[in-house]
Length: 349
Image 1: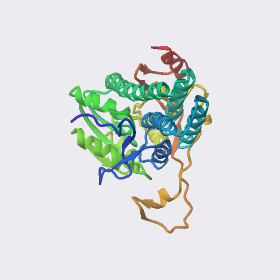
Image 2: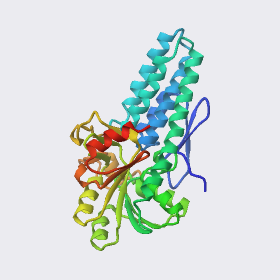
Image 3: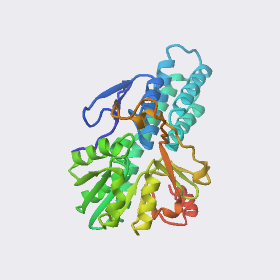
Image 4: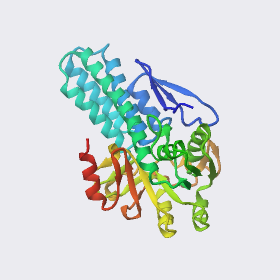
């Protein structure tokens, strides 16, 4: 089947798969303003660091198109776009791809002249390029990463780092897809990924759609599988990678990395270079999004505890670089020492 994308640009609107409804319903929403896009990101109707960056870029295009009817000059357009940028940037603080994409769009705004129609055209072209480049990067990343996967492998993954988390194909799941397409006999252990169940709802749906063998597990089964020698490697995505190689990813990733190290299992991270943030010297500087405790107190909207039960709900955790075997990017595989490798990979064109 063709590789899916979680969004589609319609020229005057952005059509998004509502990932909160999957897998029980394939429901779509249409975003016509930057505020619509920001709401879709904040509510996790669209999620995954690369996908967030892509849709935020289109959010800037929508901001320019809706502003055109009410503004009179380039100065007013600039103010409107900066307000839209601020709104979009406030949605998810951990995923650095969001800020990377918004910065690319801002550069278009600053270099364009006074012709507003030309500005909108340039913004649209840039957003389309960001999405296209993401798919191309994911497919190259898959090719590099597949070289690390044995001919037969039981792979454990966490959250959803597939086509739904990107513009298409996927990062960690893209590596698995590439290995499968090469004819390697892969089987995937899919962590359910509480509390939002991205593994159970999204990764399992993608793998089933593509005919890749998998088995769903609850998050607390991983250690037993590793001790029983039923896991050959772990591969996850990332929302931000610090200059020293520390990795922020979905909550629960750090626990898997510790378990993998204890059992002598390689732990890989797959992410585009847009996820690398050299301004963060270590994971201690990465902001961790705190989400509503109601996500912990409920499952798919059904309450499982009394409403007044306190709940702690960080969306991400940080895996120290010393637990990471390698970082897979679209420009190649980085192995320790990560600080030097991450700098060098960003210099490759």
